[in-house]
Image (tube, rainbow, N blue to C red; front, side):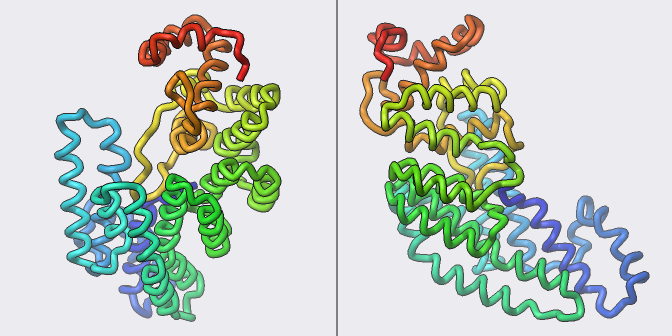
Length: 356
């Protein structure tokens, strides 16, 4: 599952609280810790914390605004929401100049293009890694190995998020082999793949038309949260089948997506493009409609590839035609706005005999 900023905030503060207890015996420490959850939720300022802890909490609040509130905010309120989040991130950096998450998130909103954001992330990656490794190696409390493990793990997470974001921007910028290299590096550091970076790699393999590479990668990185194929891998394999004009296989894969995900026909036909999560990939439940929406948005690099008379890209138009042909009258009615947005000649193309 993607990184959960609220959980990480809790973990950071709980570690700080445990350290403040000093050499209390286990029973006394347990009594003291019994109040931690209530104080964290209702009286956070009463807990011991550093400027770095305060900065990360501001990152958490900014994430709530940008990633989970802004997409549902009315246009006239969006600018206020963005400005509030940016002020939080600026304050986070004033408290902790080494708050890499705040720096990365601020630049996401200020970069004029994907290319410039990619360059920023690439240029800063080495320094971020060095800082995170330094913080990781500083955790050396041998009296509590389980605590040391968590501290060392938390110390590296900003770099994992930095590299995961860099990989996703490399994909958008057409640097597909670099995407795969970055994902491989991230998976070597975090085999549990809490950044869900493997999903980005699926799309990169499809862009490279490397089905054998995709097979090897998928076999090597099975995801226990998705015991069946997920939308990213299915969309990657669908794109590969479509590119080799194996429309029968492509329809089979499309059918698998429809079976796995609720309301999939409408979601696939709409092909809504969302802004990427700024903190990390948006958190969704496995095999939910929300997960499919995020996957389709990220698969825009495949769906909109090539020119097409429906203005959607070759694969995107094919998927739209197939979904309309499979939809019930109620589903087709629900897609009236999508059909209305297509060019005037769309009707003959949508329901014509051209299978490709």
